[in-house]
Amino acid sequence: MTTAPPLVFDATREFLRRYPPFNRMSDDALEFVIPRLELAYFARDATLLSPQSGDVAFLYVVQRGSVGSRPADPRADPDPALGAGDLFPVGALSAGGPTTKVYTAVQDTFCYRLAREDFVELRQRSPEFERWCTQAITETLKQSLAQLSSRYGERAAEEQTLARPLSELVRRAPIACAASRPLAEALAAMND
Image 1 (cartoon, one colour):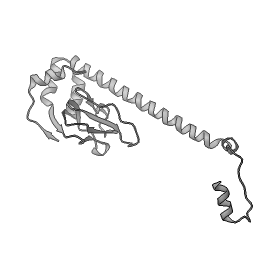
Image 2 (cartoon, rainbow, N blue to C red):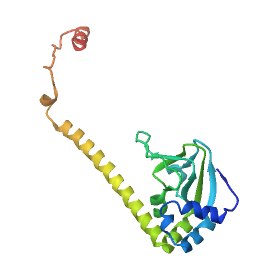
Image 3 (cartoon, rainbow, N blue to C red):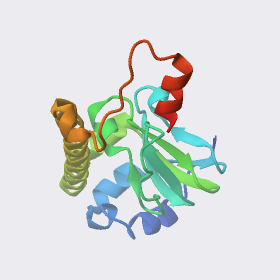
Image 4 (spheres, one colour):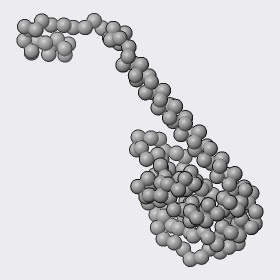
């Protein structure tokens, strides 16, 4: 990752005004945030954030390129890619902790970054930004609850299967052999 020199104020404002929540924020709020942004470059396949990165220090706004995200569990499906104007990770930044997802540049990508303390201040200065962050966190919680419910349902189904009598699960009559039968014959019967 590399950072660029100070941003051109008008071009940055023009970009931000195209996307929520910036398109609903006051000019005063934008005048606060724009000078505090830095533009960072991430090469394709670079990891921007992961749970191992520690507490999240920046809000990221994709300026150009694409960022993939997925839960830290490699078996989980990836989330839809983030593109121009998308912000992340609002929940982790609000909580002051690490992210639970891995964010990777899908292609060469530029992101505006806003330091956490400026993010917190912007939430206090802009009711529109605060409302947007609250909605984003609420949506994340709904998704987490849906995943938890799904996992609980799977687990309950597994436990129910383990609690069922063996006679309900066995589809064929069991094969038995006498204890005196040679092992090779018993294995052959099992194989058949």
